[in-house]
Length: 324
Image 1 (spheres, one colour):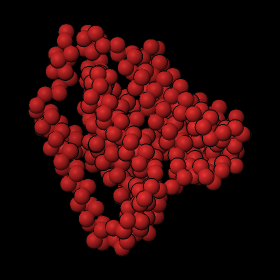
Image 2 (cartoon, rainbow, N blue to C red; image 1 turned 180 degrees about the vertical axis):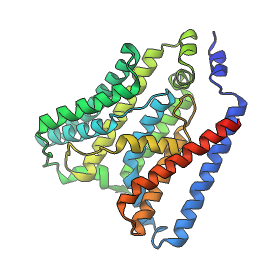
Image 3 (cartoon, rainbow, N blue to C red; image 1 turned 180 degrees about the horizontal axis):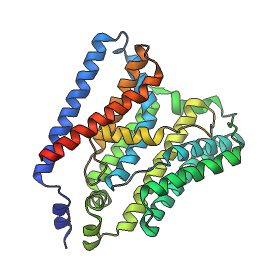
């Protein structure tokens, strides 16, 4: 069976492409309308200081969402990215204080990669589903982290390190530039590499991908490895923003990252989606959260609003799929 025939079986035909283009255009229009309404009705919303604040605060989740997108394209997801981010942040803080910045950052990235590869191995080789695997990994990593640190934060990170989380190049926050670089890299992988095409094929029809000669297990393991690596990178940036390695941090990353991808219009069934949708979903949730803060609405309402946005996005996507 050829790869072309596999693509046909995954449903990536002209009709689906047209539907995805229409959905993406509608999401962009909705996002722009929301921004215009907030700019006209909320004081100081349209100022660059506030826009830069939105970009800086949501860049970490955006980086995690890029990795989550790849795993969702496979038809899976990763509930351990928050634990990985916290672990990477704590490990980086401990090594930066005791040795050097380079070793701290390198260790954080390697730890994230290892956990991601472990998740992929359990899913691909052992056959455990993504939910059970990543949930177990999240609990396991969190437990080890709390034991290793006695649930105490790691202090002593030099102030100069905060430039990676709070610094700017000109008017643009450095975390946003890192987010943009990650998004462009993921886009290039999906658009121009054979590995990126394999992610779509495996997510669309895993059995057909095997028949086409694709090493499905390797694709799954590598994809989860990238997801873990990006979660580790996000943990480093988190440390740059807080200068404290906090074992209990990043607990909301998994659901927030999944929400960003889903709100962007990427179905959880796999095989369909783009990095632009994950970026747009991240910014949409960030803009809404920022507007709630500026209007003085209790932060306890923010999860409820996020949940409503997710339900609306999934409902619209489901309705479009039924029509098509």
